[in-house]
Image 1 (cartoon, rainbow, N blue to C red):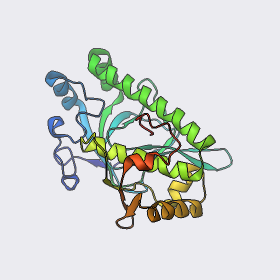
Image 2 (tube, rainbow, N blue to C red):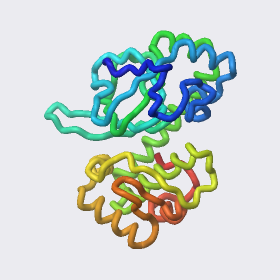
Image 3 (cartoon, rainbow, N blue to C red):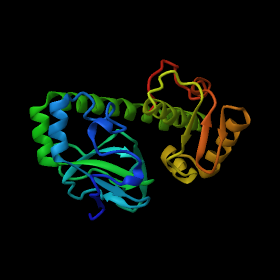
Image 4 (cartoon, rainbow, N blue to C red):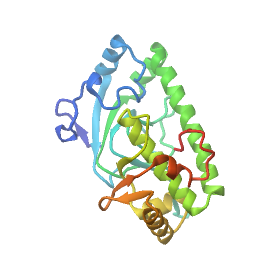
Length: 255
């Protein structure tokens, strides 16, 4: 790969500095619990890579010699069957972790959906840090367990939920992630950028494009969401949208 950004560690157009202390995902990423001296060790071994929409970050089965946190942007995880059929199986959003310590081959194809910036660590130095810095290991375990919970939720979504519930669940999950990014825990109305086209949403949710368009139009007519552009969307009331998701309203994250 040649998409390495080395201008003071990060693309200036991204709008944030390369310093860990100033990083927009500082308290949500794998480094969230690190102390000053631990951040210094991370700073010494990190580098940044940037990708444009549609660029493949890694192909399934290829060697992945780094792990990374998503600083900005969105990537998709896809799996391809032997006959060429492809299924999107996940999304990587800001603060999510790419790669798996101890495994050097990528399990899925990872593709940039939007412009994306990754904070990367070479695998071997990062694995040494995992052994030496308990704060990194404990945070990575926590994130892995959260990902497992989200995967189980997704099984329910794909297997049991109606089309309306699927759309509502996806939008609520994105709204909550946006709220966390803004450090806003009292979510009411929130504006967000949809990371997926309607075609990609249909693929991800296991429904047709027509169904996605129909359900979004219905939610808009009912005043639960407002379209503020081609990909910009306002969730008028996250709780009201959650009521449409089929979940038990326990406040848990949906994705």
